[in-house]
Image (cartoon, rainbow over all chains, first blue to last red):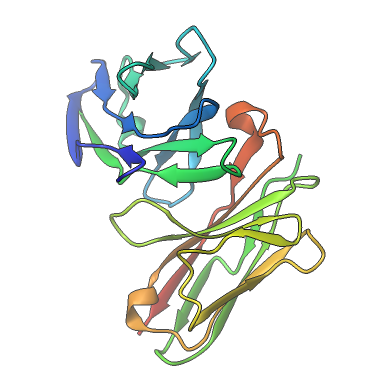
Length: 115
Length: 116
């Protein structure tokens, strides 16, 4: 079974609008972390936001927020007020702390911001 | 603090040749990861080290790929002999044992390998 599932291969959003990128995960660990990374065409992997499994509040980092629904095992990324520079690949990832810090990535979502 | 250093940045080789990539993690990070990212896909874990021991190498094609982290600091990933399908970006990442949340896990800039 896939550890991380991203069902949206590509998304488009109008500049200044908000967009939600979906991510579901599968783990039997009680202690885990969820991450979102941005990968522009340059190839670097840029950390965006993190949610720990025990965090009760949704994580926020500037224009990024993570909609964490533990019972549904989903960790969607919300980008508010999209900018042209947000166009990139976005990867959801999970770290299973008790399973030896295993780290798994989804297949990614390509986001294009339209002016 | 300095980030995860990787070299070379780009490499072009012919199939059946050998190639090696180098990674220097963030100082003090016990865990080091090598990923292969084929164009259009998510990174795939090749090998994970904790200090100088291997934690997971289940997806490492051991007939041609090898990796070492002799002193528990920097690491080398080797491909010998290379195949066309090895063309990818090879990413190195490191983390502290506790992880320190999202900021405790850092990627290098990657090595883009093209096999012709």
